[in-house]
Figure 1: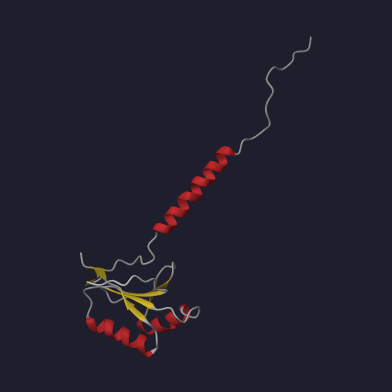
Figure 2 (figure 1 turned 60 degrees about the vertical axis):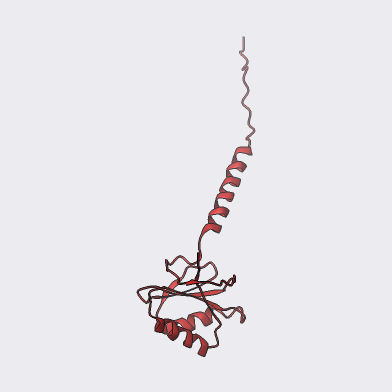
Length: 136
């Protein structure tokens, strides 16, 4: 007498749980990518009473050890020598002539360092905006 199997194995595979995991990962990466701050160099900015909300295309950062960093958009800032600032900015500005540079200078550095950089940027006809903190 031949015995029959009562349980048949179902060969179907449900993708519902896999799509849930994919959507959760997608949401996680979208949220974490918008949280990333483009200016990751910690600089204590001076305070100002008036703020102009703008989004610069490029940025130059001077930290308290007088190291210069150049970056654009969401890319990470690169440390450069003082004489390399203008060529770096020109390379970044090739896309848009109307872009300007946001200057992030540490509060404790000498005023002459900021003026030296501003004069070189002005000689090369590069527009500059100074980044400050609002007065609380």
